[in-house]
Image (tube, rainbow, N blue to C red):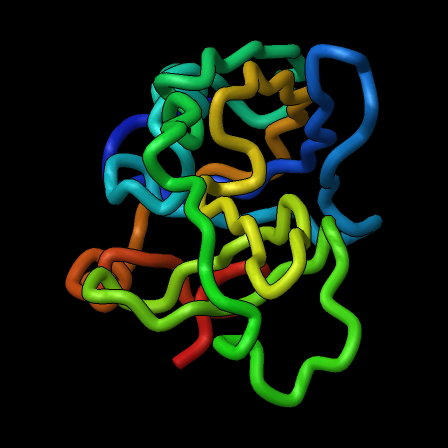
Length: 161
């Protein structure tokens, strides 16, 4: 049976929970997530833990924040004028918006609204959190030439152009 190595396409089911045990995300029934090992398609800490695993393996892995979505960066929290949110009537804490930045599109989360100012946080929502994945490997195969060229999986569970 093939053990996961670089340039393999891997499909797996997962349930992602935070330190409090709350489920944050999970694969859909019958629709495992597919990725290309070694291509950086998934967070580094999880990719590293999947190396050497085989079809049928079930395990739990905790990925520290630094190997997941990064440490929380307080510099990414800033106050912006309310008029930047044109067309939004009620801006409330917890709302998420896409902001165009020099680094491309970034998701910002509203932390608070104070008068004419809005406090936004550009950290990835899971930054600074240790993440626990319950994983079951369902398929391991060699990647096709095209997948290797493109750096991601094609077909079901993978990337579509």
